[in-house]
Amino acid sequence: MIMDEPAPEYVAARSVLLQALAALDSHLSSLVLVGAQAIYHHTGATDLNVPLMTTDADLAVDTRRLADSPEIGSQLRAAGFRPGTNPGHWVALSDVAIDLMVVPHQAGTDRRSARAARIAPHEKATARIAHGLEPALIDNEIVTLVSLDPSDARASDLRVAGPAALLTAKVIKIGERLEQAANQPDRVKEKDALDVFRLLQAVDVSEFVLGFRRHQEDEHASAATTEALNILRGQATAPESRIPRIAGSAAQGDPTVPPAFAALVGELITASSSLGSDR
Image 1 (cartoon, rainbow, N blue to C red):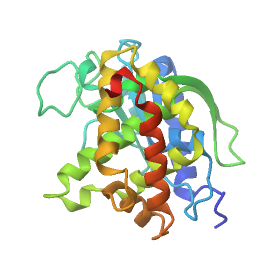
Image 2 (cartoon, helix red, strand yellow):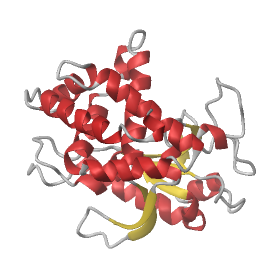
Image 3 (cartoon, rainbow, N blue to C red):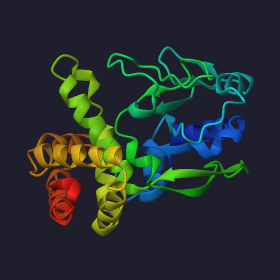
């Protein structure tokens, strides 16, 4: 495979995303693309010897913009999706999935053990609760997403999270999984660290800082940014730190990745040091 071509799994994931967006056309203003597909929108292929690859699509739901009808579950079922075993996980006939997620402060429940957001009148398992996506709700722009299959003419306009919001979300996800790794080693996904590295490589540090400043306009987004920067400071500032080492492993053991990762994190933290959310 040529490295600047997306993996077949990524092509399929974009196809299913467009299928879901067509089904949820009435709710597009409440949806924000996050996760790997959003990251690749900002980074392109980069020069890593690892193709762009993701097997699903992640959508944050901003309940402030969400209409009561049509009911999301009914719309997705009519479009050929079925609910998965976890809340918010909707599987197409091709077995490719989309994940709908709601940030904790919009989830309609204060129970720490709750996994499903309560966004009635939409059914209970429509979306799962996911911390770290708070900045994506305010740091995004509308983008025209097209199919990655040249024979597929479909396209959809959708909000896509900005680089700073995506970095925050991925780093928090990695931090949570590193904490879980003591009891569940398979929780750590090397690809997450490599996606962070792709962002750090492709996006100028000044753009990250502008995004972080935007996050300060909202208390929930600001808190998430602070958390992510603290994780990077504690676990990504040296080549031997955990997150750079994981990224190097995901890059097929490329020895240049950990030191480059750590150096880019160092630049980011230095540039972010004047932020009120980073003090």
